[in-house]
Structures are given as structure tokens and as C-alpha cells.
Amino acid sequence: RPVFLGTGIVLAASLFDRTGARWAERRRGAGWDRAGTAASAIPIAAAAGVGLIWSGMLGDDAARTARTSAKAMALTFAAETGLKYAVGRARPDAGLGSAKFDPLGAGASSSAFPSRHVGLAFAAVTPFARRYDAPWLYGLAALTGLGRIQSREHFVSDVIAGGLIGYGIASALYDDDQRRRAGPA
Image (cartoon, rainbow, N blue to C red; front, side, top):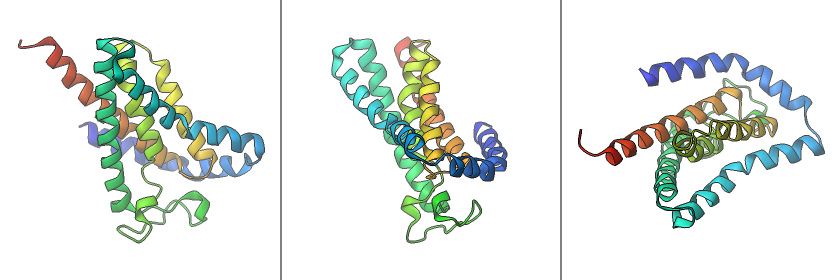
């Protein structure tokens, strides 16, 4: 059921692909471009933070949560890379529109769908957001999506798909970790 629900959400989000591309086109310029670049760097900063926390600097509980986050990021990267090859969607900056697909084509590894940046951001923050009741972390991950749209790297549906995949994988791993922590029922 979650896959069907996620697919429906991504299809609904695709109705906003053209609107999002026009929004990004109107927000080009030094200030907006810097903001988009900064937002796109959030997953890199999150990965570095996860690595530091995994080292144990904030205690065993945080290290275990960081380990779950790192696993989620690795699985999200693999899943979304596979989807990029399978879908081969053109990026907005190519000017080909949101309906241009070249599955398994030469440039499929760098295609737009789904957004790996956003997927990685959600995969990184979800275990921490759930463990420490910190929903504001999702807002930080969502800023990555805004940055990717503004920089014309992704359409709205690419960003939504990436976020749902990262969130879904991280949530499944987090739930599994919680069952293991609880022990046999």
C-alpha cells in the first residue's frame, strides 16, 4: 500500500512540474542561486554530521541512530540510482519538458527522477526526527528540494519522489531497529 500511495502522490505532484519550472526560471539571479546552492549542500552536511555522531561523540543511543541513518542513506542512494537508470527523465535545465524520458539511455545516471539529493536528506534526518521527536528536521530536508527546484536540476515530482523514497527507507530501517532494541515480545 505505501508504494501505491507514494506513486499517487508523485503523480499528483507532477501536475505542478510546469509551475515549479516557471517559478525557478523567475528566481534566477545571484541571491537565489546562492540559496539554491546552499540548500543543495544540506545532504552533504547531514552525511558529515551523521558520520561524526556515529563515532560516538554524543553517546551510544545517538551513535545507533546515526548508524540507522547511514544505512538508510546508502540504501536510498542505491535505490534512487537504479530508478534514475530505469526512468531517464530529462532535467528542467535541458529545456525538453517534464515528459521527456530516455530509460537506460546514455545520460540516465544523471537523469532528474528521482532527486537523490532530497532522498539522501530525508534518509539522513528521518531516524533522528523520529528518535528525538524533532519534526523540524523534515523542514531542513525539504529545503534541499526547494534548492534543487530553484537550481533547475529537478521538477517538483522528482523532489517529492526522492523525499518519499528516502523517508520510506529510513522509516523501515528505524522501525526495524526499534523492534531489535525492544527484544523478543
